[in-house]
Length: 105
Image (tube, rainbow, N blue to C red; front, side, top):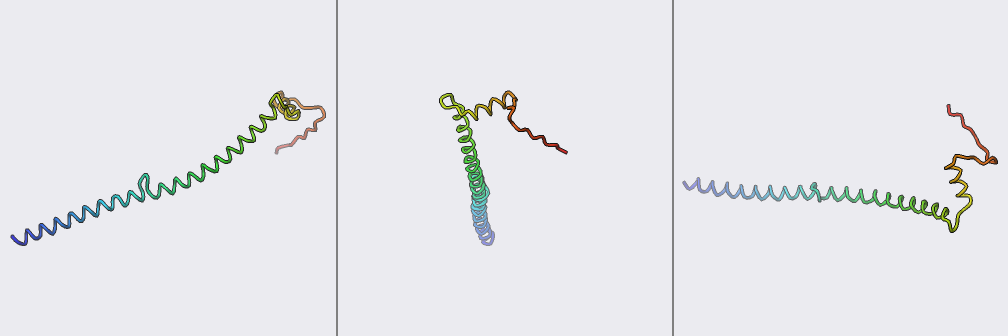
């Protein structure tokens, strides 16, 4: 009887340590691979860098567009810009323009 009680207490202790190790392991693995873990943080950092560069590109593109639009405003119309847009939209060519045709083979 004494050996069974001792064996039972040893197995109970081992089971408690095993459960504690499993819980610590579970949280450790989730800290590394989980939704908010270390891997996710690295991926978020890479995405932040990519989106920051895209934002800078879009800001430059917008500034260029705003600059072109400002040239077409009625207070200060740039004659060259107006002529270019009118020709493009009406598909006209100035008689003094030189047109070069490329043969695509």
